[in-house]
Image 1 (tube, rainbow, N blue to C red):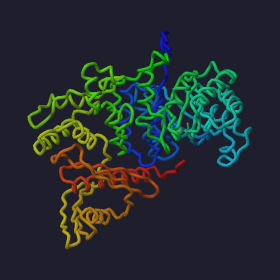
Image 2 (tube, rainbow, N blue to C red):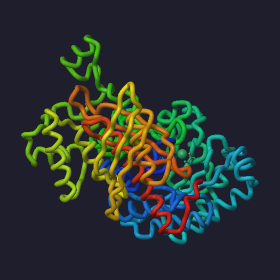
Image 3 (cartoon, protein in one colour):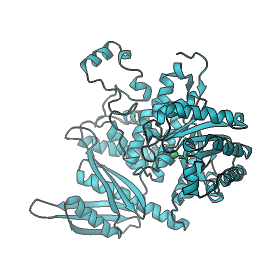
Image 4 (cartoon, protein in one colour):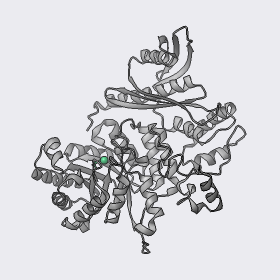
Length: 522
Ligand code: KIV
Ligand code: ZN
């Protein structure tokens, strides 16, 4: 079927910084969130949900910083249907550069109302309307979500939506919170709710779909076919459990099959790959190689017959070009003879906007690296930029380290760190291998013993001159912190990663102490 009319504009509501960040192991520090927010703006998302301000002082501060910075997208903050949550969102969004959005949710399914909320249906309907009315006093753009809508009585959702609309909601969101719906069923639900909510013509309809059965994108597209105006999604599909609907898949399905769906977005698709890489860098969560659009193999043609076809005419086996999603296939290699211009051009091409001072520092590091490695590729450059642009401020800085290890002896690790107040501390520990001994020394210096939940080491690129990249996740006081370290020496990359995670932890602890608040969670 071919649709020839003007395509309907579908709004992209990105929740990478909120639902995505809630996923296990996907926590981000405030600098990383800011960097990602800039990238989402460049991508052209209509709305970015920057966080859940009432959940922790850190989240509130991040939403505040993002809202103050972003001009090209609407910034939203999530709230439960509680005045204290709405007050936190209001505080976080007060200095927004653009008119912001308050996003309120309350569950409408029998199982959530009975066991989680311990509320009757009447109480839920009443609380939803009251929360929207309260938010409306401070913000003209209010979205209401009926959590677990796909397992709710559709007529009850219509009733709650009608109340929310009367109270001033401008967007009504139908979440498939547990990824339970089937595409045709979900499409029909969206249509039914639109047609049976009194006053529906006054609101925009949104969907928010999780991927527990691998149907998040299919369900989102079915919803669009049935009248949804907005889809909520995340870059790389990160999110609670099996994740959320993947932004890049929805956007490219709409772009490639505009003829069929007669709908499109305003996303600059050439920014997709850069955004995906940034999310991988920030979270340490890699995308599977065969992931649609952004996986390593998404545009790889192994089989001879495919290669032949693509060489003769790319359309034989490619329904979109790698360039259309921002994958460059014809780039000059950078090395020690590359000048400032070539370097700056590559930063731009990779989608980074860096202030001149940071750019200078990165360029110096690039030159040092280019002296050690013949070829500096895009992954090396990403790692360099992330080390400067998205790292937490350093409470502890590495001064020097040494390890002694061997099969007959145990290992001993010496480390000297500089505290931000200028004092140096040095310690030696014995351990079960070089990394263990060094990490023990660091723990003793900082006076804390965070749990090491993940330690992963790999090569940034192939070949023996590749840099080692280490990812660690540590847990302290029920919060998780990521650290990434890169070096041509794998022990040093491990130390840098651990210190980065510790600095992210110390930063949050200091912020909490300053604000006198403890994280409250959801
Ligand atoms: O999955 C969900 O229902 C949510 C809501 C808060 C929209 O994330
Ligand atoms: Zn969700």
